[in-house]
Length: 269
Image 1 (cartoon, helix red, strand yellow):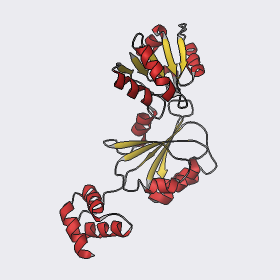
Image 2 (cartoon, rainbow, N blue to C red):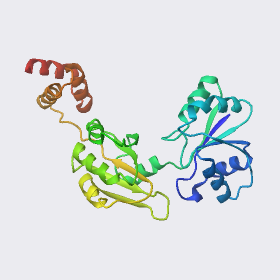
Image 3 (cartoon, rainbow, N blue to C red):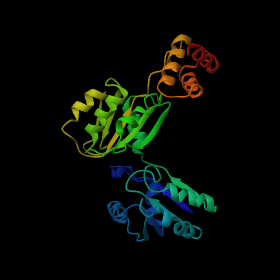
Image 4 (cartoon, one colour):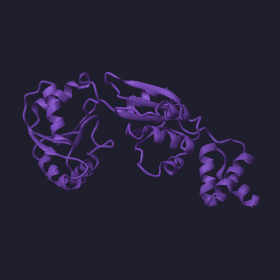
């Protein structure tokens, strides 16, 4: 069996009893960084010395089959440096390989930077998307592609790129878009800073340190009257979208009839 085990994202007090019991008894650990796994076990007072295997982004494809084979006869505990494996960390490829091979996968739930940041943000939590790490290049275009995303969005970002990312976000989504910067969650210097994209870009212009989660407000609904909806479809078509796709996009965002939007935009040509 493969066991995905969530580890503390900062505060060791968040280690669950199930995690501690698993660390005390497991014979095999596949860890993103074996040194981090050893440090965690020492910090928790665990004397067990299991077999340690490295499983990280550079070797996961090559290692997955070996670990799946091991898991047929023994439990393999999978750890990342913090949080839940497979969430912007190694684990996805392994789980997919295990599922294909018919090997059982289970999880020891626990701390999650994504959900912690979302809950603290004060932005809507009923619908959200996790977008992973912000790309290093082409950020304005990347954020522009999310301009009509109505759900609250959660991102990971490096502290070294935070100010530049916030400026690019303000350019693509507008300076008034609400953003929350969550820094060093569950740690001694935890900080949750709320404001507009422009305000936070200025606030972090001199840089910062620590682990960063960005929570970004979703787009406001498009106007729901038919003439405005038709105009929005026409504008999307003028920008290069196909009429069918543009009608579907505006219909989904506004609740208007896709057929009426399509016919209205066609007549307006």
